[in-house]
Length: 255
Image (cartoon, rainbow, N blue to C red; front, side):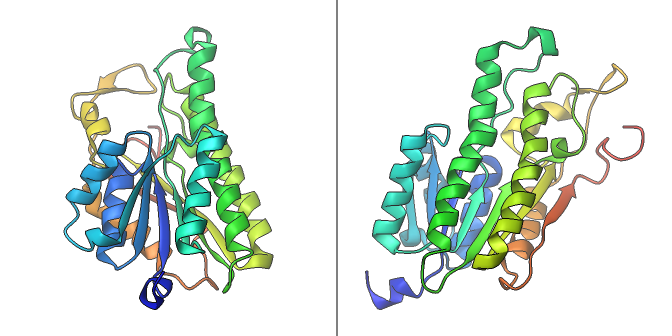
């Protein structure tokens, strides 16, 4: 690794093949970060890199299923071997699962959502924490992707909502433990970003009162700006929680 490579800031973005993860990975590349993009589908990661407008030579795509501990171990072994350090983890990978009432949700779907959203986030956070507290100079930043569902559930979203509430506990505990090692841990809670996954909201989404109504979405540039404001802080400052949402979405009030 050259001296110029050693001077670069290193980031890893999970779930970087689409949506929020892809947009934030591209933003990091545009800001001269070296970015490890990871997710289950290597072709999607490579597509994210191809569609970046800058610094594609600073991007590395590595396939990883965050719910599989051995995959995460291999990912961080590769990061450590190539770069020797990590400055930012964006813990973004997640799955909504199948919308269902509690008694209709299969145990298989429950485990898949929990394994990806919570256990996978823990695996990545723990490996990043281990590297950040022993590297020189030590420290770094971890941003967990929560969700509006970390505060208020949608109907028929028990697995997703449970995991996103748990991410808040993960964030608080890791932020406390990270203080002694200059590791800043925060959480971004995003509501109705305009992604392929939220496109059905424009046609209509089930509401708390039982009606199906369309919901507004916000442009991805708003999410990227919020994310960048968190990561551009010095490590002596931390945005513990940030909520960024489509202004008119049914979240506050009686919903």
